[in-house]
Image (cartoon, rainbow, N blue to C red; front, top):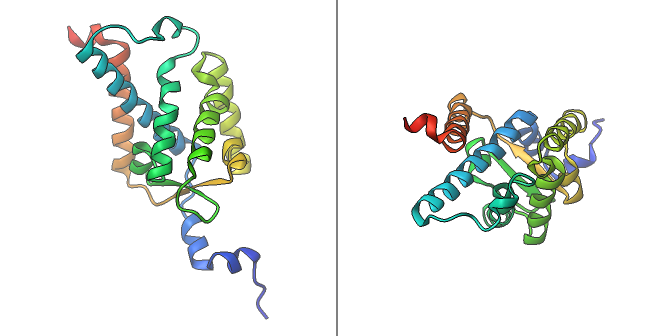
Length: 187
């Protein structure tokens, strides 16, 4: 007589095995997030160059980098409408909530906010590093983050081709160099 796991009743065994057969590391989640940030910061930089002038909160940037905060509503809308972001799409990840394919809008906003607040420490130096280490250890040990637990979300991953990881790394590095060291690259 075969024992049936409760998860097999709710979700077919083959579907469960497929979803969890390629568990991504925290590094893949990190790359996806920073790929999104690289695209967003590049878009903000381009808008700044086109329209000129300073950003309204730029004088506070030494305390809390506002670019990362302004990504919260963009990410939430993408998660609500598509279930993924450009970085998650590139690295073959999708966020689901319970049995739904996409998050509801309030959960998407809360999740995005808590990733920025708890996971990234609002990008404040030192605090950021500590929050990333804690989130990394929690994800490695428990296989979920506090924001995924709070919003009942799960990050599903598919097999990732090596070229996708390479593209993500190149975009992140190039954008970082171009945005943060423009004078050295323009000479």
